[in-house]
Length: 576
Ligand code: PEP
Ligand code: MG
Image (cartoon, rainbow, N blue to C red; front, side, top):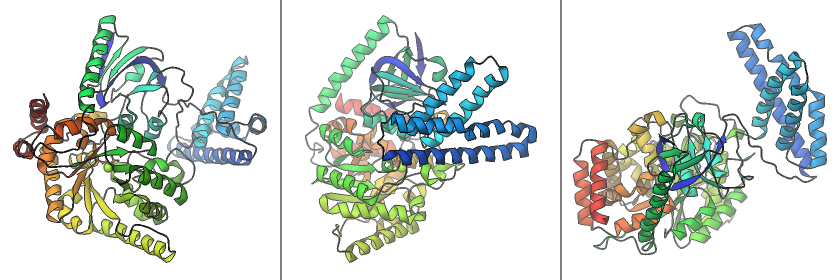
């Protein structure tokens, strides 16, 4: 039995066999296709070959410049593989015969080649295997967009072990046989961790080199609340965790008992408790956990895991269905927040040195009004089917907010000209997640109908801690006095301007901080659905006076640790 300690990313306990995903391995999806799909698949294949060729030629040039012509010539063999008529024809003829997606067919042909070459008693030819392998992986990567994992064929519940998982890999686990995951890298509020919470599977991230220590089939226990991972547990440990799991169930039942009651303090102050979603299917989970509306609908997943951009119609249908399902409660749709740790392969966004400080969110949208307007049009058209609100991510100053509002104004005019219906009074808010926005919240408040504090980014930017980097995760402190002062300032600025202030970062769903945030005057909390019952329970257990006292005392403390300990202690006193 070996115990590892990582970063607790999504709560809960899971016991089961490990399923390891190598860094460079692809689980290629096997998708049936029809006759009509064949030309498209052939085109995809050709495009992938051209793209791969370009990559290799560029690589060759770089190597020739840095190391010399001889080294660069190694890649000639790779280019030859790409031009191999036999291989290409083999793929196309099997595609026509077998009717599966080209990525799958290509990977099968590749396997056959490698198999044949490895049986040949010729050292030179044997060496070609690594060329074929290398080029093959490049082609596959280009065929699949980015590394994409499929979990469709899992026959039993497993715990995924990976060096890293992208948010779209995590999304692919939805409703599959994955009961948890652990990764070498990542932080508590990386989008991968957030996805794990919404999928309601435990996750531990930032384990450094766990992939070197675990192999597929090893028995694991993971505790997503404490960040503990146990390899090959003994009987006694297993019993302890099973007992813990039972206890957790008991506590959850206590919270669940009040899930459908209003979120109202003992002295009658009511607040809004909303849920965060990434996929429309998660609405059921919000309802099941007693949430009223949606305080953050992240729309990036429309743009990921696919070739091409989502159309207006497709988005309209999704927003409309969400609006209708949640009505009469509100749905706050956040315009697309690409960049940072959420990439989009087909838009060919250049690789940036510091993606979180780069071409992200509203910056990207203002530079690509075509993409932005399509989304705004879809949201506005859907707004007559429920209570939709719109908000922009990563506003850093007044001009950005004004530019975004101007574009929304133009879209409204275009719709009006075409006599298409939309909610003319739709509320438009700004996420406050950049320190410059937090400090100038009074200025921004004049141009926004509401604020929503995005603590995940606000913390990373104000404390200068990459939210996805496990090495600096110890510095990522929601309760840092700098963060508390900013949150206080934002709420006060909003209230002075007469607009409500919400919080949709993960901090809003941290039980320990709920009372403090309530005391600071937060109007709306939006969080992963599973924590809603507990938050309601807490809010229903205090008075505003108590909450305000706790907030004032917390503001006097000097470090994040002190605030965290103080809040935990107070929470215990309140809910027992
Ligand atoms: C945030 O930054 O707190 C937030 C809610 O947005 P995201 O996590 O999607 O960046
Ligand atoms: Mg954010």
